[in-house]
Image (cartoon, rainbow, N blue to C red):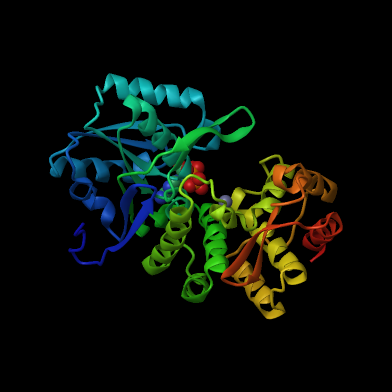
Length: 366
Ligand code: ADP
Ligand code: ZN
């Protein structure tokens, strides 16, 4: 696809997942050019966003679609993870039905991971699949959620319990949209950016380190490196079968436990993952041969992006119990992802219970 042109460059990453291939376009100002970029046979384009994103970007996207000759409409959902339910999904289906959406039409998911997951799941299932264009507007969604084709809604206590794999036709990322993102959301996204940097090592880690100075304005080349990294991992394991995707769990075993220990109220996902990455570095030094200087380098990067220095307000026992509840840890096998060095992750590491307690104590007292 020749998307380049205009004043600023467009970076393109082609994602191959199973038999599908699609482009991720990254560039400042792309939001205003969405109509021309979406192209394709679809006549109607239904933009799905939430109540926070609508006043900021919906108008621009709709008028871009009009000038490109499309028939746009919009569905505005309540914001936040608590809206990621079957009830909201039912509302989406009702609206798509009332709008007369057909197989040649497209759903445009404009927003963070929550909107991408919900609109994506609706697009995957409505009429057994209509075209999906992902337009992520959070850092987390740009580097993580919008790449890989996972779409889902929550069910009871289960996050992403109902879902499927459905690759978009196109992903458009405009870093200018991050200027309005609340600071805490920016920081949360950086947890995944740091995770990718530690997993990829090399130039990706260097770009991450230099980007940490301007968290709200990430270099498009950093976004490109992150998307490229995630795409490569996903390409090896499109449907999470071979285990190659497991390395993306770096920092998440302890992170999820911290998130749950705070009853999903204290630490955000990103903040908890930041602490989980600290734990993974500490454990990697002891169990996987990570060089002490590289561990320090990782810890400093986590600090540089403003993620928490230490664990507070959470009981050590709760975190330990929640780690043990993790299915893989309980099986004593594929629990932890650790680093032999930056850029060299190992999945499936068993961590003795004693070291699990020690790392929690270290997080509380560092
Ligand atoms: P995530 O992408 O981290 O999974 P959400 O989809 O819940 O998270 O988005 C996080 C919050 O940020 C939501 O309240 C959403 O409405 C809001 N939001 C998303 N994108 C932007 C943006 N570009 N500017 C301002 N707020 C945004
Ligand atoms: Zn995560």
